[in-house]
Image (cartoon, rainbow over all chains, first blue to last red; front, side):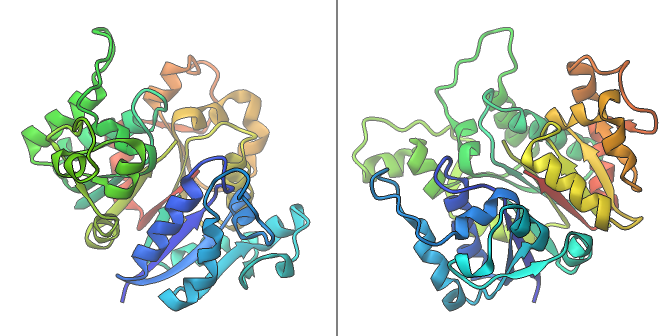
Length: 117
Length: 130
Length: 99
């Protein structure tokens, strides 16, 4: 089965890219083995304690907890980017596997397709 | 080769769709096949039938339509992105009881599955985004 | 192997992420293509940033010309037409867009 890497690079709420990227991940899981890389400010999508109720925007991050149910269990981030943002893995809503910057391109090469959001 | 193109930027507001258009034309000139052009996120704005650019500016939507008409290129807009941004074909316009439909006929509304299918079926996939 | 495309200007999160990654992990078969505002990375003012990279760097000629950068670009960057862009895509196994 082909392997797709979907990357999420946008922070949530200021634009809908994060949510629409997640929709693509869920659809992708129906077709192929999918892994997700949260890179750059995309890692903020996973921060715990988000509450957009006053904004009136959907808290789409609740869906991240269901990714495993969709068969999407390979969730990655870039180790140095966690450190740069002073984020600990325990502050994120789902477990992530940190990869190093120096290993990033080799990691990407393992996939058949990359879709960037 | 079969090449899939993903467009995530609207016309004029960002260069993404213009870059995608130039890339699409070059793809065909080189003798490759465009498997599908999938418009997602703000890319769906490229499908509006109501765009009326100044005479001295590139008619981006018109160019996409011409590409489709002349070379049988499939232009798909994601239904969720389209509804959210008010790009409706007749069916969706009636379904949601809106006053009008505005999707240019060269474009077809479909699901995200078409994006994934394009990525899996084509030999190469290129994303143009804002 | 991987064609990395960058359409954002230097100092943006996309450009910073892209350069950081390519500076430490690209292999000799990868390439970087600058397009749209990514063309500004080809400006001589950013020579130090590009020196970190050991992979071929390309830029879309139309974007360089549009922005008036033709006489300011760093030596060693290869300008390509959209036909050249297509060739790069077909020559590399996959394309990753840094957004």
